[in-house]
Image (cartoon, rainbow, N blue to C red; front, side):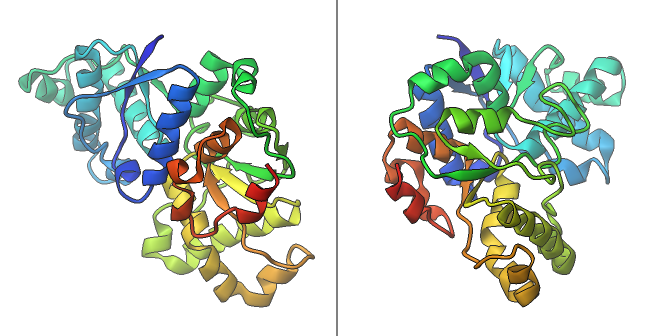
Length: 296
């Protein structure tokens, strides 16, 4: 059994605990071992790179150095924001071996960091485990689940090596392997608004509205995400979108509006694998998938 380094990040330990619960169950279920990086710290978040790039690079880079010191070849990162931040930092460390960032890290007894493979769980599950093996663990196929897989804007862009940056499909393929129907829609990688829902709410809500309205218009009866903040925006702000946009929201998709269950993709996999609802943290969702659960 291969051991992967595991960088949780801050969100899965606070606002998205159900993501980590379901992630750990699914990874163990398919036979993967995760070893949490000792003494990891906050990645600094993507916004920090716009205010103090060198400090942000050093803060994120510390985690990379720790992973390498702990002889972890791969680092699994469930948050796409953390993933992007760590990749940016790693690029800097590879290209600047003797600048102030590298010197600061060396002063703290840290070196390297450029040899660790940074991986999102979707990448690991699809490319290392594979859909055939995933299929072998499915006990309760997701019948009648019409899933809009939401990738967000940070996993496949600007780096295009995980999936097609314009039309990613690996999450769709994992969901269909679990028995669901993948709903095709054009906004898979459109931004959810990120932190704008908490800073410029009108703009953030408009971005969430565009996504939800299109998903519903295309026939989705649930959504799966693979980023804690994307999940938070779609799940928590769905009711505010309905309140703010009212009839515009309800008429945009031509059918009766029913709130969409927004799940972490590992929760959907966990249901298909036969894990209990309580183990997967489904009660922590704003809209529980009660009707969908009756179908499996």
